[in-house]
Length: 178
Ligand SMILES: [Ca+2]
Image 1 (cartoon, rainbow, N blue to C red):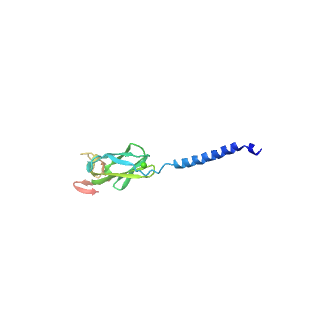
Image 2 (cartoon, helix red, strand yellow; image 1 turned 135 degrees about the vertical axis):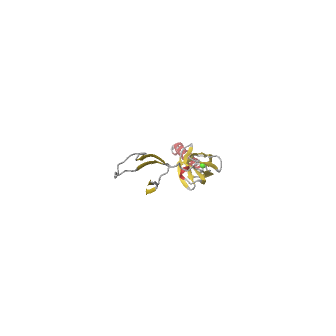
Image 3 (cartoon, rainbow, N blue to C red; image 1 turned 60 degrees about the vertical axis):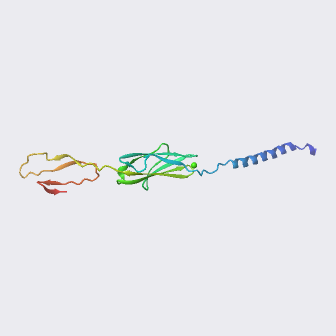
């Protein structure tokens, strides 16, 4: 009677447990190692160090990573100007925002594990000075005739690249308003 006890299912169950434990251990060993490899980053444009630039400059960055690039940050000087999270990594930089002279372009690429790599290139900003303001209309018109004692409204429209325009009216060479 005792020998007829169903020992086979017990052995099967034990084997199942062992396989399960072994499987768990195996899976634990399968956990990927942390990514400690930083991205590779380089500035494709401007390509030449100390290049002279003006106007809108397309800053183009090549960034690669063994796991994946999460973002590329663009710094002009020390100021973060743009962040691009997908390739191609590009920033259209308006150089009018900085003074003429040497300027550092710094890009920082981050991977999905927050490893970071930096690339830098120095450029020489040489923006042209803004064009002179242009008077596009003036009142009264040239050689207009007025009656004595009549009040004359003097007005001018000025077109200028600059944000602030100083102006001055003069009559017979004498400044009246500035
Ligand atoms: Ca990486």
